[in-house]
Amino acid sequence: MPEEIVLYEVDGRVARITLNRPEKRNALSPDLVAALKFALRRADQDESARVVILAGAGSDFCAGADLKALQSIASASVAENFADARSLMELFMLMRALRLPVIAAVHGRALAGGCGLALACDMVLVGRSAQLGFPEVKIGFVPAMVMTILRRNVSEKRAFELVSLGAPVDAEQAASFGLVNRVLDDEAFAEEVDAFVQPLLSMSRSAVSLSKRLLYQTDALSFEGALECGADANVIARMSEDCRKGIERFLKKK
Figure 1 (tube, rainbow, N blue to C red):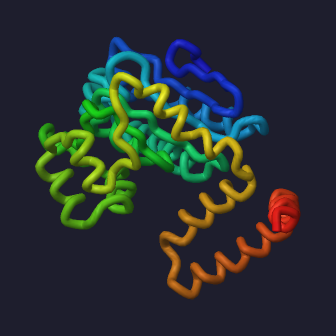
Figure 2: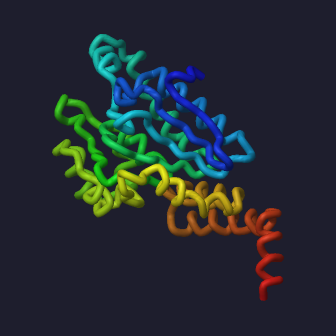
């Protein structure tokens, strides 16, 4: 993994992944997407990690595709554009498939694919001065794959407003729309992000992982099918060592 593009470290039980192109506002490029997938897989294989925090170096989280990538779209062949689009699709799918919860720590701007990247995380924390949005329509483009994620976060009317007008929203608006979990103070952003994830570090890794998988698995299922998946997950959870130990601790307290 090119260390200068994406930084990776484990601090305690927190895997910290940082987009490291501050001079480009952490804009998405094929190399950055590949490096990010590498880092996420690395975190998922680290048995000491309990949560992933995804952040951006510099003043912005991620400003979307970089200029070089945009310029290549017009001259690229159908096959090349398809391969590039599928690489980004694989990133979004990987974030959902990861066993660990992935939390976006968004400061500054998260626009276009950068906003999609944040929303693809399991939870989103934003600084009070952050801006989120999908300006693709202004250049005749479409937030195509990102719309799948957006539609699962907000209402149909709100989703169409965001993608058709292309105007960014501030942190408080994003929270009212349902795009983010928490709005944090800019001055103490890093500290408040760390405080937010602390409870996750003491939770059962297997229980959190199973909950994440079940939550997303039921998206496309019928009511009955979702209940059946829930019954299967219930049995798996009951048989886990974490559950056995947790029940023992609970009964001792009683």
